[in-house]
Length: 311
View 1 (cartoon, one colour):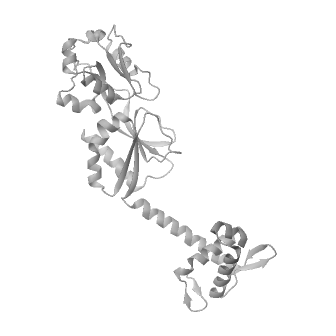
View 2 (view 1 turned 180 degrees about the vertical axis):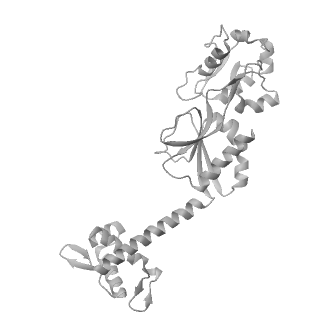
View 3 (view 1 turned 90 degrees about the vertical axis):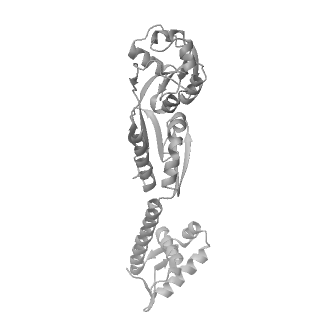
């Protein structure tokens, strides 16, 4: 619908405020309530409507006692205005969401963030310099309904009720320690000597994990006997257990994706190369299923998949 004022003047953008005032008055059926919503006085709302009617050349309301009722012309115009404003809102939202710029927030387990995500993040920034990344860490699963998080990185097997997820990587685990610690306890290819070692635990390895869950799972898989789980240290992050192992504090369960750099540098060794196990858990990128991911989230998910495939 093309709006004209009088018989000759075309609709001017300067009249948007008056049209918005008209729609609010029509929706509430009251100049007083429209004024409260618009933070105007009732007389200012009445003045805007009167001016709009004068320029349009027809009445918009029947002014009844304590009540407004749309005229036929007013009802037609109100429908058109509502469609116009809804279309503008949708277009603006689409423009904002389709720009590869703005802010993205990633939530990740501390060890995933430190050992895998952050060392690679320069590549994402190089490709998408207009996207500002905020990286938050924690051991708890976040609530996408209440937290402003776009994507979360978890080490788990799911399920993810009400969420969407992409499995990024599988994992393998095996004990790791410093070369000096392996020599001190004669560990190379001698898993029975674990009984003499201090075990380093990640007590938050996955949701609801027991403090010794990683070690217990590995020991049972490879049928190692005589292991003393209480002899050692416990941490709430896998990377802290790795730092302790590098500094000769004991033997830790190493996740290959997270410790590969230290294995290649020689800071850590895997004393039982034949006893590498596929992990029960995987790395997942998790995001809200309630809305379609905007282009910024889509490029982040694609980039995470690319990085996982490179490993």
